[in-house]
Length: 118
Image (cartoon, rainbow, N blue to C red; front, side):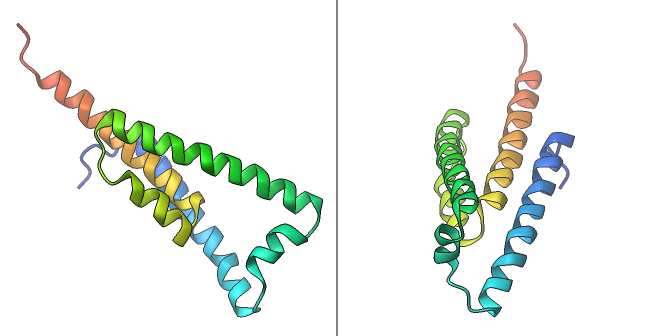
């Protein structure tokens, strides 16, 4: 079970869990209070709108990175991270992808070390 779980992969995974718990705490609060979720994003003043644009641009860049890196490393199911970000939070799926990416990099490095040398 601990195969390929490096300290960096564990760090990314812990951040993913923090992102999931942190965002869904406020999502649940918004649901209980019957708030207009999207309306609160764009109508709560310039500071919130600035933060919204900031995070949306980072999320788009992160989605591109997920697709490119997944293809480069031969990781299947990259689209799942992107779809799940709409259902959970990008603060969860992006660090989760980074954890799985780190595990893949570790596996590739381990496999390369085990190849017979000629």
